[in-house]
Image 1 (cartoon, rainbow, N blue to C red):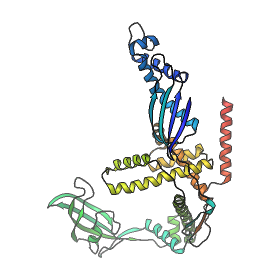
Image 2: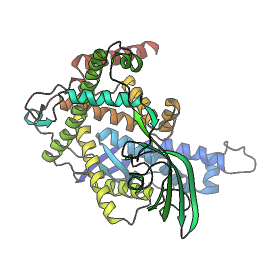
Image 3: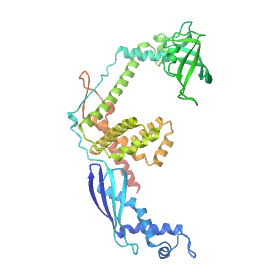
Length: 446
């Protein structure tokens, strides 16, 4: 099969494919077999109808059309693989010349246009410096974590005073529109200042004591009157404050595995250090992407962005929202640029994705969607999305490798250790050895 490639733009090519009669013959044979299963001819069983009889019944032209339709995707994929083309999006095919519908002689000539991943020149990574926030842990950080832990173990105590931010109010609510009651709720425990109920409720409850009632206007958030403005009558039946346990050795024994508050604080210090290191890694990752996109021109196929924006807006029911369309377009363009850039880096760095890495990534994805891993993987497989997941893992590894090649410092000018985000050489060697061992096992089993 002869293929020529014409570059139409940095992100689009045209393939001219010539399929000889010999190369088309398997598809012709398949077409005869398939048609033989579909038609009824007296004296012949289904599937056993000879080609000459099929030619008489449906014509060679119908057989040829069936064969081309069946084989076109195979010819396209073979051409893409042979030419090393990295496609993006759906191809558009045009048959420019058909073989003879008399005897199937002559080549099948097809032109196919498809968006492709552009070539991207990655800048010198050792010349890039990324600045992130320091990860130093202060006593205030530890006190904050300890306060959160004490809050978890706190108890609510009824108090005889006006409610204030941080208190829990036991309340009854009645919503009316034009004097008609549309909703009500009783015995709700609400933390003042949390902002988790209706807009305006915090201000309404502030300074109320048990037994007092007030009204305010707010938009309803759910039910058949969602979005409508209602008058809310709220009655406070009790005011409670959270009473926190003392931060002493007894508390440490109740709230943790430690015997003393000093040991608990030490553990919290290590926890905060990990959190801040993780935060540094995420910040460095974000700033790395921004720094590279500032230095590299990454063209993106317009149709790719257009289709993604339409899919996103259609899912939200906001196709007519021009302002949001602009936001989504900018976001989608950056996402595709990032993917293309790190696909290039992954290819340059010869990044490999092990089965263990892919499985771990899929398990994390299943947890995010609240699905069983097996069910999640089955859905992805049925939709042909496993290769896409492998691509995401490869890009994540490429980002980690890139972070190891740029300079990362904090705002105080101190070098930042991102070893937790960067695979070691030993890890790469282990993966290569595992892959080689798997290959040997496969060879031995054949």
